[in-house]
Image (cartoon, rainbow, N blue to C red; front, top):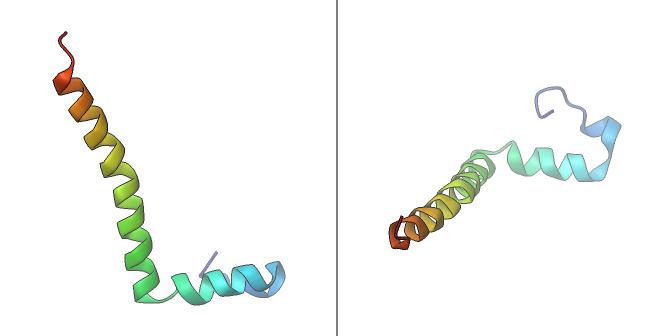
Length: 54
């Protein structure tokens, strides 16, 4: 969506989205947040599994 310049068709929200996530800071921030979205639940499940006596 960022490469197609659809921001003019979809309105103000996509224009802000494109302006923020089109920068290197936006890409790094979204990558960090997505990584944490995976790492935190896996760490919690791993901790719970180690406590469980199977």
